[in-house]
Length: 178
Image (cartoon, rainbow, N blue to C red; front, side):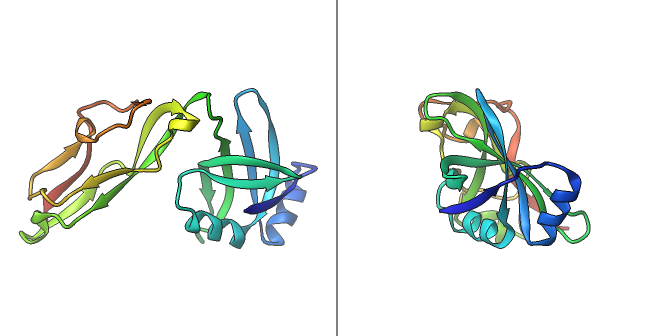
């Protein structure tokens, strides 16, 4: 489990000092809960996020354990080093909006015909309770040929989950390479 420290002050001097010591600045929030200002060791946070097999993961700050998802993050514009992350607490019975990643499987037919797979939307907005939160939308791209696309309406949605994207939006497609 990822462990973090509680930030006593949100002053810019303290924040810079924490970043210099190798910490990632974070905020944990949820509806009806006071924001938790904290910091995690940058390398430990990256390892934990890459190693997780579900969308939500556990963090421990000041003795309390939170089930969270990454809501937003900020990177340095030149070095691409993570600077800040917002973590949203997943409440089991609270309906909220989440961004769910789109994962592709298979090899498209269009790749043999000099095509490329283009992702228009890598994450889709859904509304659901925390207990119904899917880990990802898995899309099989095997039948896609050049000129074909997968729309939001073509993606199966689990029970208890409501898609918040327009049905006619393309999620991914196979286009002719130039």
